[in-house]
Image (cartoon, rainbow, N blue to C red; front, top):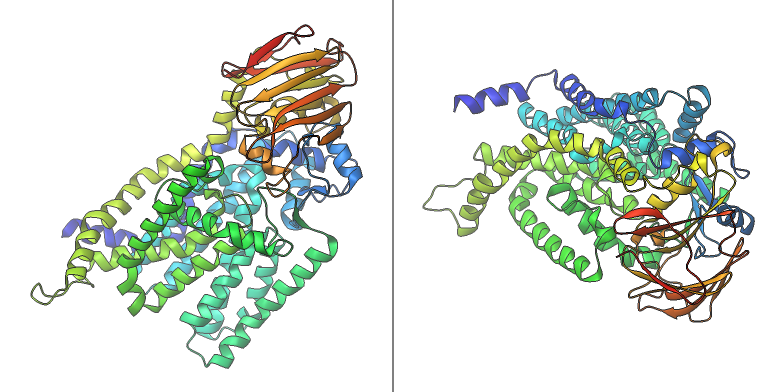
Length: 588
């Protein structure tokens, strides 16, 4: 097959690290012109010193759990009235934080430069992946295929988002550490014994996901290291020591998550983590190897989550059956599989998303490339007379499912990569188009924006509350009454009082769980005191959240200091509170 031979020659080129780096940079290039999006504004606010708590160098310190901090967030509208007392969301990412501090203090008017930083790091990660595959896979064209599959993974497109820099910086250091570790163990290059753990430490200082590096080092010791067991154990210990030291600092300083339904802290919530991690792990593996993307898990209703779990278990069982013979005979395949599975642990602590799969993808794409190589080279074929039914089925699946599936992935990958890279600005344009009748933050400075209902917490915050230039000059006080895309019935019961009722619950949007988990259920009669707002829970839905609630504001609803907004007929519109006793249906 001359065509196949030419493809193999191209994939085997020693220039593959530069090739995939160039491809990655080209695909991410459109993101340079997308400006600031979503969390970028929050990081700018922190780095510019407009927030009176925490450090300007610690932009991932969102809430330390103290009453004063929570009161500040509630007063500014950055935390909903339903926030759980003691809510904590602090991530120890000093290296990533420092890069953002530099961005927003030295070139705040040049977002393109911030995007360029992400582009360079992501391209470097693609090149490092290619180097690692070339070291571990003896067949050069399979190593090249793995590098290309990894570089073209659509989930990497979000790396162009400035606020997501930690998700690519951590694996860049982690993969670099694995390369150095392999040089030490395979080539007896002694500097790798110290430089590998050093890069691992830098990865941990960039993002918690770098813990996955330890998983790959353990997998390396079990599957690839040819030394005696004692020597293999000693080779892992430096990484264990770095992890332990990092974890001590993490706990002593008070980093981690508490009270959130989207973020879990395995150290403080081990049982809850063990209960929720399996579904998240299945969604992440399916998102990496098949479809749908893992992100859908957050928005699926309970029945949808069951369906995803069933599909995921079926797919993973089929994939395991297909790749079983390869795992049985090839230790590198076992390394990739075990490393990818262990890399799931840290990212199962947060809501499932394909943007978190950069560590998992190292093992998954290496294993997938080996499977394609096995099929293409006929390594699993046996003479027709002696082939078992299982072997014939695997050969059929390889020819008609795996290889076409990988080809389709390579064809669609670049397109989806660019779509993902532009997804946030596309969503931003959608929100702007749905809010054309409502003033921007700079025109509402000094007023309290009361959002009666919104389909999503992120949309409400970044459209009406957070500043558009990272300073307090456009900071708006916001009050969000309900968070649900479904209909809300509003009744005004007094000059300063109104009641909201939903057919489901008033906080049904998945992002409502950011500041309150499902473990702490609301009860009828609960009262929440916000700044200038008191909320009484009148009815509770089966979800444990308010189905109906009474909202009492500090002044009459017509007070000109309030600017009212509602989500109705798929758009944000100015809202005029009805007369006492009148009723309005919103969110139709």
